Length: 92
Image (cartoon, one colour):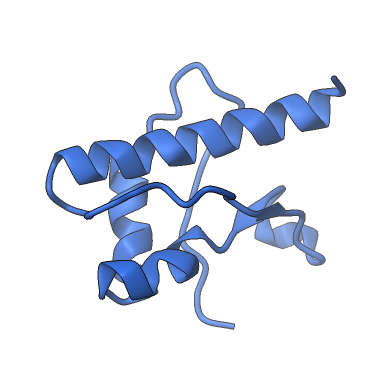
């Protein structure tokens, strides 16, 4: 497996674990979406990867995507991963 694919797998796992932790804490209802999408932003200043996870969960959670993103970020454990930082993008 190429390194880029290993990184993608690790990021998806970290996001899934964050959703699971948030659900266990009562912050989200879950479940983790089956297919967490990751993409490389066209503008490299927007980071190495982006996900629309919060947008895809908005309907099931009945919350604004930004609120979901904040919850996921709060429960995201970056320790021991390739994730050096994570932030919430603005609309658009």
